Image (cartoon, rainbow, N blue to C red):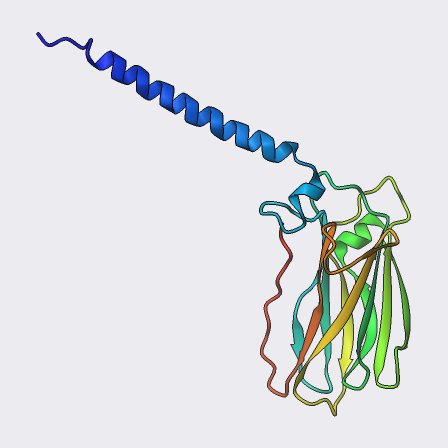
Length: 204
């Protein structure tokens, strides 16, 4: 009858190796979590911004109205927000703001909107939209917060209009390199034969 005793040392060695590898992996994970945020850097793999603002791409034919959805997201654990302000600069000739419509989530949270429109220069419009949450006991909505309704000029040529956007969260200016939030600029596609463009959303 064969004995199992010779196999026992090999099994023990295998278990010891597996234990060592597991311990090393746990130590590496702990080291990553112990590093300070500025040591990891804004572009470090696995890091997520706390907030994101994005516009869906939308389009229409000259002489028609179209709606550009606006999304705001806040990851779990991030501080609540009281106000989000965006300033968009775009060519004045092809598009004109008609209205800002709050989405269902914003209405349910009691969000208020304030609009200021001015001429950035002779050919461009500067639009500032402020989404304010007056009740600090409520959570700022995370999801679709509004529609920007634009009228497309009947004389507009086929083109893509980019809304050059800046954002402030509770009066803190969010730059393109800020690790605090991500910002996706809006684009309006004007075409005499418009193609329906599916909306996209910033996920974390």
